[in-house]
Length: 299
Image 1 (cartoon, helix red, strand yellow):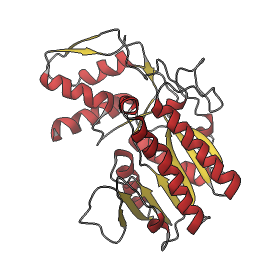
Image 2 (cartoon, helix red, strand yellow):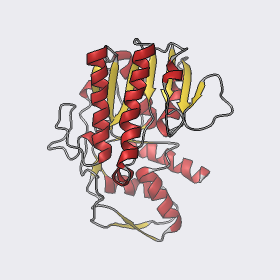
Image 3 (cartoon, rainbow, N blue to C red):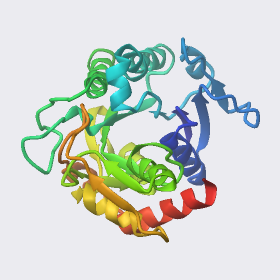
């Protein structure tokens, strides 16, 4: 089993590489980060002008997972061209290389639930209206369309995953990392929103297992699949749980103001994922406890 993970030095990419190696896959990585320890199974990419042809010219893979791209809603608003290039153009270029050198390689693109925006009803299934609130969400939807294009017109085996709120060891951005940084240096913390916003959190250990299940069960006919746990968690409850692990009392309040591009409430319909025999193994309390222990130990 030969697999290549593009974006292998990122949060999800590193976990996915380790997971597939644990299953006995022969794994190649590709990223813009120099890795002096790995030479034979690693492609160093040019961040400003990525050429994916050399990845697919000489090795025949069973699977390519694209974990690369930008992952910041605020940055997509400030730098929409950069976000477009990383999340959309690169997907086109990867699929062009696959189409040129090895049409049988299956392709999974890591997309985002940001394509849904503020849904009209919960839970959100894959046929819900697409109404993104940011350039990031628009570009992730365009990447899905590119995957459909290469399947429909060139016969490639593609699949797009709409990932909800993933967290876990190694993540140094987003909600819980920001909470940790604020708690270290501030006596009184002010947070965006009302606290009644909600997300569908999925632990990184469950996410990589879900990706493997998709590989084993998807038809790869430009499939679109939600990746989440199907559980709505209020932000105020997630914050309270995380801060409960600190020895000192953390004083915080919600400002009531929202950030541009942030949705209000999310809960995924994961019927398709469950049809692949998916079930979560890490609940939010245990996952946040492990994450807390990791950040305290390392930072």
